[in-house]
Amino acid sequence: MGLEERGIPLSVIDEDVSPLSILAQTTTTVPAEPEFLEPSRPISDYLIDVLGLDPDGTMAGFLSTVVEPLIQITLIILAAWLVLRLVRRLTRRFIARAKRREPSGATDEGPDPFWASRRNKRLEALSAVLYSILALVVWSAAFLVILATTFGVDLTPFLAGAGIIGIALGFGAQDLIKDFVSGVFMLIEDQYGVGDVIDVGDAVGVVEQVSLRTTKLRDVNGTLWHFPNGELRHVGNMSQDWSRALVDIGVGYGSDIDEAAEVMRLAAEDMAGEKEYRGLFLAPPEIWGVESMGPDAVVIRLVIKTVPGEQAAITRELRRRVKLALDRAGIEMPFSQRKMWMGTETQDERVITPPHPTTPSEDKAILEDGDEG
Image 1 (cartoon, rainbow, N blue to C red):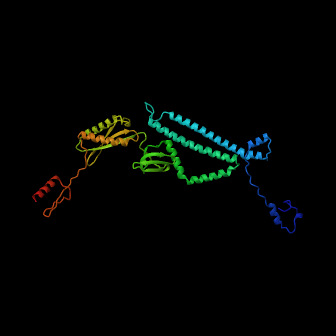
Image 2: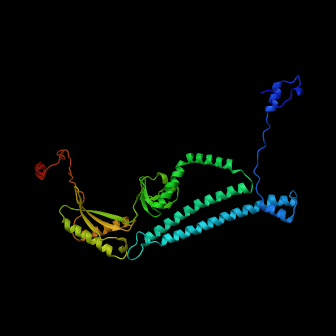
């Protein structure tokens, strides 16, 4: 394209000026100034029109730069607070309605207080988690609205940067997110709660605290374990629904097995009928029969269905009572028996312990040989 076609007359061109420099000057464009979002000031504009103020005056500037931003921030915060108040009221109404529903552990006599209390705690924990998430969302939205409407900040690059930061945090905090999600599902599914006795593989103990990220477990030695919820792959709850106390008692081979089993059953029934233990037994005691036949005893198993978490205390007390009952009935509880050879050694005689087991006749012969010597 020639200079004439670009609208540059050849007559104004100096002979000393290079045509390339002229083309460079004509193709160079001045960069546009960056555009800034002008925050809206509807209240200030309305007051300026009503009061007839000078738009460039001090009063108009004070209204638009100080008064209206404060009013906008106050209104946005008030709106966010009202939304959260409405959300909290709806959440409480939903939780109250859920608490009034008949629990799964209800009987003809009414709802089970244990399960009602457990369910209420779980519902309250879920409502707290839900409210915390909604509060975070509402206040974040209110902060962004303040930046956009009051200060005129363009949120496009801000949101893009926040998205990139969120992705980076998502990759860097995968374990934290996994713990949080696992904690939410743990509460929803009621896998365990505070006061439950659980087995997580590495430790067995009582749950002292449950959060969305960690579970605190106190074992029998008093050690407090902290487990991230995302690392708990398998959890055995020993305090959910009901428990079972297993009492294995060994009696001698010469004892009457049926009589020993009946003595054990009567001892357990007497314990179940007492006022202190009546509410802890969920079913009559059962004799399951001979569990094993060891080298020293015949083991009989007694089983009791108990309230969750009480099986250990019932087992200890029941062992004591069964031992006393068997003693009163004259039934021997066996113990390990071993035969020991005692020998003396002098200068003239030496009694050597046989290197292998002997029969009673061999033992008698050895003793007679010793007496003759």
